[in-house]
Amino acid sequence: MADITAAAVKDLRERSGAGMMDCKKALTENGGDMEAAIDWLRTKGLATAAKKSGRTAAEGLVGVAVEGLKGAAVEVNSETDFVAKNEQFQDFVRTVSALALSTGSEIAELAAAGYPGGGTVIEKLTSNIATIGENQALRRAKVVEVSQGAVVPYVHNAAAPGLGKIGVLVALEGDAPADAMTALGKQLAMHIAAAFPQALNEADLDPELIERERAIATEKAAESGKPANIIEKMVEGSVAKFRKENALLSQVFVIDNKTPIAQVVAAAAKAAGGSIVLKDYVRFQLGEGIEKATSDFAAEVAAAAGTVKA
Image (tube, rainbow, N blue to C red; front, side):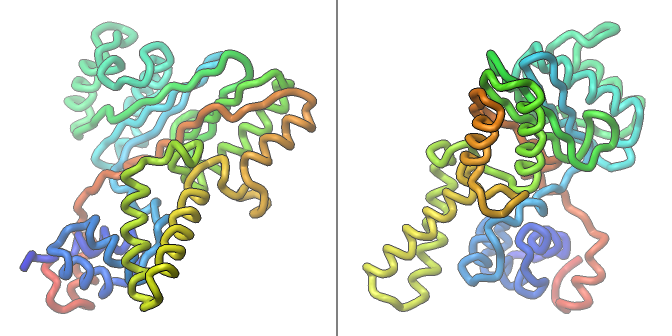
């Protein structure tokens, strides 16, 4: 039997929203496998599919930069939040975000790019590690661009201008007035930060993500004891709901909680008297998908669970 640590229970609790003892049982039932434990909790109705914020498990900053009709978002990780407040680190993230406008979305190209003052980006990062005294990593970058329209940036939990925990870019293509584009872009960016879409369109959703959702829905439906034909309809209904809730254009606008984003864009275009197409977006949340073991929760878990190892 796998040893279930307090850190693993804490991580699962944050990622799933389930109770502490349920998390311990889920890990125990699944040999300590975190992803399998999440699925197990969901099949039991003990966790929600959209508990994404708990996946944030690394420190650092997300930087966004916009120049003309192009925008770039970059994530740079550090070991502690203390470093994220360091002016040297902030200046580095701000600089590489601007450099990404030219290098594009490939992180290797950004790392090899020349850094202002001499050397390359990766050499500057290595130097920062030595002087700041904490490991850092250039994790990911994405660039979006339109031929006509606007790219609108937004930073949630900003640590400094253009730097924060969540960075969003909204790429709007069209000939509507600039002020209308900017106003719509800011509203959409705030929606994206809050709603965490997985893709622009339902057709763009990751097939593996859909199959995983189908498997979970199938297991949950099977427990209902209903006939096979009813179960099939239940599964298809669950998958369709998942697609709708995770594709940006079909998500319900968080501001009015009733209008699909596609209709929000269409209404804004009509009001502005021009064309507006939501072409692309970026949403980088700091540490998304990175697991970092912590032990500050160990005593609480051990005391409550009894047999959990710290």
